Length: 338
Ligand code: SF4
Image (tube, rainbow, N blue to C red):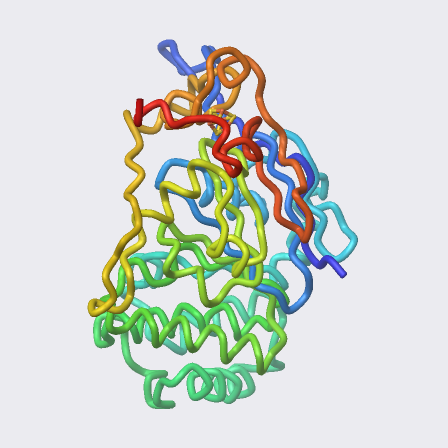
């Protein structure tokens, strides 16, 4: 059963101009009609290059940005329409782990103070003594010594600071954790340790994750389902194995062709798919398929005029491309090959 369900979520930021910035002259279409569903205990990986709207979507789920339209249904309640007062009740159950562990931890507070702040605000623990005991248990669970309590963020390594960020989410006993680029600020050697920790915690505590990353290699092993975002929209969604075995959207194919082969002894025979141009501005997205200005398979007519919706190809594999079938069959040609 779905614990978190997004239906046609839009986040459009107004672009203001004028002396007092009170004149709206346009919009940035950061998230433009995303629907997805995450079951309890599942991990949904959301990938795309920076600027595609994935972080904004994560923040929209927590109502840290205004939702322009659509529904964010968590455990049967549409958070998008909740008054702020009622939203507070749900905040404890939906937590976020941020990309930059140091930037998200107050350098002037020790770890006990950082972790107990949210607990006190949400009424967890009858007193500080109780909260301290719970924090100690959580620190052990995330692989940090109990004496970390009295230390400050700068005394820890990057990987340890991310463990503190995870502990800060866990002390609030959440159901869902949104991990926004949880390892991209860390050394490659530490990344696997943090990903493994997230997996262990999920198994032990039955957590549900939305993992946001620009790197397909990061979400591959941890995700049950992966959604690929481009310019505010989902262009492909599939169970993790199916997406890797058979990417169907041209953008996913291009992303996948850039993922390095993990074993240096294996010869990489894959053809690199290079995208032309830069990511268009979300303030002025192209008409039709938003990817048509960069797509190697773009066809005259339809690609530039009709926006494709996500179509289910079966077994939960969905793709937003007018020519997904023909590209698979080889009956449409790549423009960059002729
Ligand atoms: Fe490329 Fe056209 Fe498919 Fe868009 S609809 S991904 S432009 S082939």
